[in-house]
Structure formats: C-alpha cells, structure tokens
Image 1 (cartoon, rainbow, N blue to C red):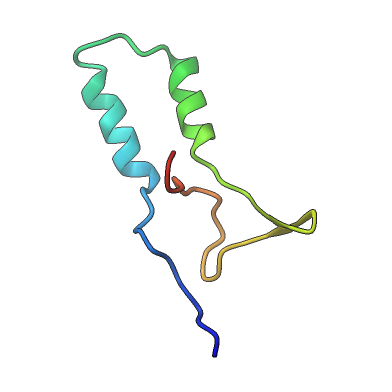
Image 2 (cartoon, one colour):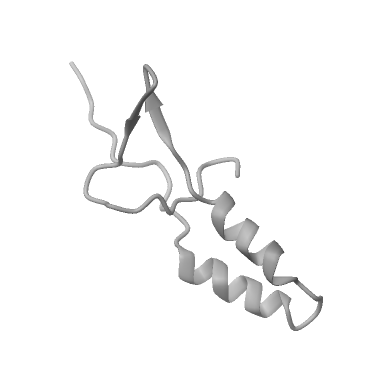
Length: 68
C-alpha cells in the first residue's frame, strides 16, 4: 500500500506575505533589503540524493515550509 500526499498545509503564497510586510511597514521601518531577504528566504528546495526535485503541478519555488 502506498499513499501520495499532496500537502499537509496550504502554502503561504507571495501576495499575503507582501500584504503583511506592507501592513507592518505602517508601524515599523522595514528596509528594502530586509523585505527582499524575507521574500527570498521563503523559497524552498527539495533534494533527493543531491538531485533537485520540484513539487507537482507548480513551476514556482515560492512556498513557506512547515516550521519556517
């Protein structure tokens, strides 16, 4: 018996993260470099035996993984 698990949690996509950064910018100063780092850090890579893999049905690396 085998299972194909699509995902446990719905991914947090880029538009809500950008909206959260815009909201936070109303209360604190967030330098552009910090915003860029946050957006880049949410990209995830999947490796198997040093070979890059990609999620099915997507062409983006944009995904906030569990625990991030």
